[in-house]
Image (cartoon, rainbow, N blue to C red; front, side):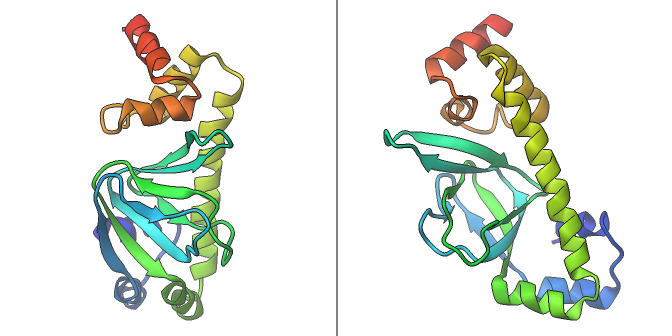
Length: 186
């Protein structure tokens, strides 16, 4: 829980009562590798802060192939950008993971009680969006080797923590192509 408070304090000051309220309105949840935190087509109305582990956002294309869209690692929030609408993708634990979870009601209570909560969370999610766009935009127009090198730069801790099949899917290459790329750059 200390990690969550330290993270929030980067965006604003909180007093002891506000910190206590945040801790009171959250629960810790553990997920094992490959467990889903959210599933496409189902309601997902939680806010979660990743304490430990890596999650991947994925979906199935028209051919039924699983595509990794994004990774979320420690000290990042997970939320449904579509509000109360059903989630359109899957959120899967790529490693054993721990989260701090807030229900929609708990989050609303924080918003109603902590004066600057909406401003704080707006800054947090704006910061996350900028990082996400930065990480993804460089992958669009580059060749596979360059995309892999950029992946290593933008996600330096992931390569030894998650299956290579997830990385290959994220980069839009086959696993055998990724193996060749990795062999050639060593």
